[in-house]
Amino acid sequence: MQPPPPHKPVPGKPADLLNLRVRYSETDQMGTFYNSRALEWFECGRTEWMRHRLGLSYAALEAQGVYLPLVEAHLEFRGGARYDDLLAVSTSAGLAGRARLRFDVQINHQSTGNPVVRGYTIHAFTDAARKPIRPPDWFADRMTKAAKSP
Image (cartoon, rainbow, N blue to C red):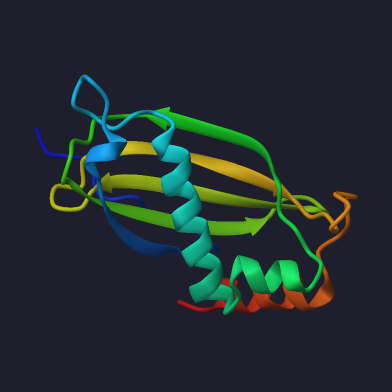
């Protein structure tokens, strides 16, 4: 049986690929990664997506008074990953409604393409006081440019 192909980005949403190696501290007694680690890997993917696609770190975004607290997460665990396995984290993003940003993530074994976990996180745009705001025009402009880049 052939493994499924690696994650294909959502049309219109350029994806970034990040390789991560499962660390010993991320495994549990059963020898596979502990489930909460997937959300940490999702964070690595979205942080690097913003850095590469928008030219903007989280720190730079927050320095502009814009915050992205997590408001929803969905994960589907599709396979295991053990200590020292190399994983490919594919992340894409798009605006979701008027004041939210959605990151879609697929994590596969880098060598085989076998799926490990997939899902998404949704983040609200807020100011420093956690009051909801709309994405600033400059952010929306960067998202538009990112959607047009390969």
